[in-house]
Length: 408
Image (cartoon, rainbow, N blue to C red; front, top):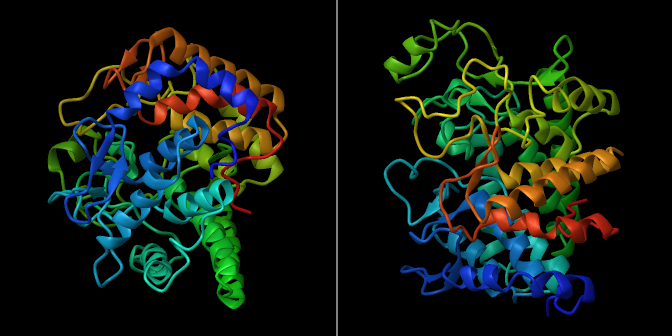
């Protein structure tokens, strides 16, 4: 039973979201391999990894049962290879095949347990072991140089599809992402809670230790004291070429492949707030030096995926771009993560302002995949019934005393 299904404040919100719920019904499909129904925000039927996390939050708040959320997790786990690798979309393709599903599956499983009380579907011999192998694949196989930080395979793998300047092209595997490693901190903590519930206290303690060690590693390696920002790290520093996409390497104006720091300011740097990795002083600098800086992230319709003073900040796609636009665009899921990070670090008034600006943006421009950070115009898929709908529930979260997606 969804514990929020009868919440009177949510019921009031839901009454104004009948059209959105009807749109969501278009996103229910059946997986051809497992025969199980699932929900996706995409009319072309693809089940994506981190999209599913935010789509699950929307389903919880909409009062839907847990079925589609559970199935989304188990469908991914049923597509796991012997190595532990799970391709990041269902159905997959030749580009997604080698790109491991983003580390959100344990967090989604915990979302179901905390909000529906359902445990047997994941805490069993079939799926718990698979969840363990999938997480270890991230922590071990995707740490190619053994420095304690995992790598993205490409910019599309990050989910921020066209941020090639920080994460390269298909199979470049050069970016130890701030966002990725912060997600892994949360995922390790979520997995530890699942292990406790499964009666494996020793395993739980081990993964809490891995989360702590990874958080310390992020602070030690990715924080730039001079700039006051968390940067991605180039795992292939010193190699030539910098990117396997020669045209893009040239377009980057002969950027130094020897530099271990990828000095591109993107919204990924704020993941350290969501994962509670930043120290209070680091959080202060992130907020005051960068987030509230109109030359960087406080655009007319905040928060853009890339700082406004970056060379690559553009409202138009570059010729070599792949996928959706993550430069001069505002995306609801990253605003959502940032909102919760701000609340946790005590920036409640700023979090409330960001929540209001986010809700106003969606109500003004409509249900779209993403939004122009300069004009507020809706972009991408429209109508869109996926993760952008999380914006409508920020007013409820403003009054809530707990986070429905807590992992600690």
